[in-house]
Length: 409
Image 1 (cartoon, one colour):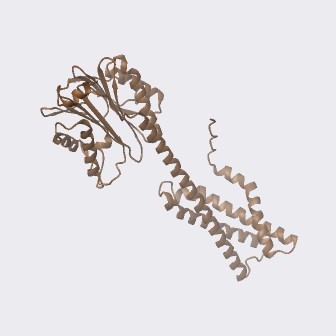
Image 2 (cartoon, helix red, strand yellow):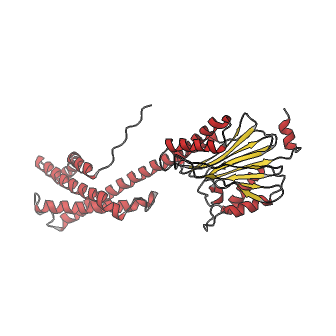
Image 3 (tube, helix red, strand yellow):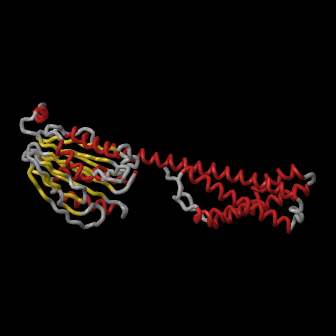
């Protein structure tokens, strides 16, 4: 499919030069209108057209000056949105129309139509037509602005819908059955879709890769970068590389393949399904938390900076042993930085306290749901403004019912 031709950027001087052919054309219907009302001879029609031409030129010049030199000062972009922008624009361009009409009337009065402002009746007629043109210009401005705002909103909604579909296409909804481990993750998209990403990959050597990432930015670019992260991770999943090396390769790919402002936080762990040995590396992500079955907690911090900022980055790697009953909670900043109406954030301390109070036998799905429910209650109807993503890894007891079911063919 061919790409649409890009629109040329607006230029004040290009628009000014276009008046050479636009103004004479616009003056024709008005010349005919006034010729029918006031004219009887051919000369009257010509005079009506000349007068309309003067008015059209003067009004166009004033509207052009208001658009390019007055509007950026008195109505800067972003000061108001939607319908709130329409009335000020209509008043501005309506005022420019009135000034243009006055200038045109004075020009006619002192040049080709002396005496056009000599009596009260002529002035009243001029004011009536000026008001008519102001309403006409105001209506046109209202219609054009309303149309542009509607198109912008529709385009933004279409882009967000596409971003959601891209994001959903690579987020797991069914998680692998693991003999000693239980994993569940949930992503709740905000209105402004971001690039939250998680994945669980079963490798050929009996270990499992668990990843969670948060891409900077919103919409389609963030979702596409998330899909790139997943593709790179899965490409390297079966090579047996250390997690730090996998992150280093992902960092190089993101740095070379994306714009300067695109980067991502990324946490990657490899868990051996037999020995429960866990190695991990954290590239600037929110610290996952290991809640020990016997009490106490550990944040998983060792790693390096975010991926995509620098081409050559050395990531460190750390390891630990998981035990039956341990729980690891991974999350993005949409959880910890969710803010209520007063601006207070949910925060890590509230998250830690919540998880520590949950029943030890609550499954991974239940833990993720309890966390999301707690954040929603905290927000009390406030839009979170960012995606909320939670992933929970739970280490099962050797003889737990969940483990027995996982072994059943």
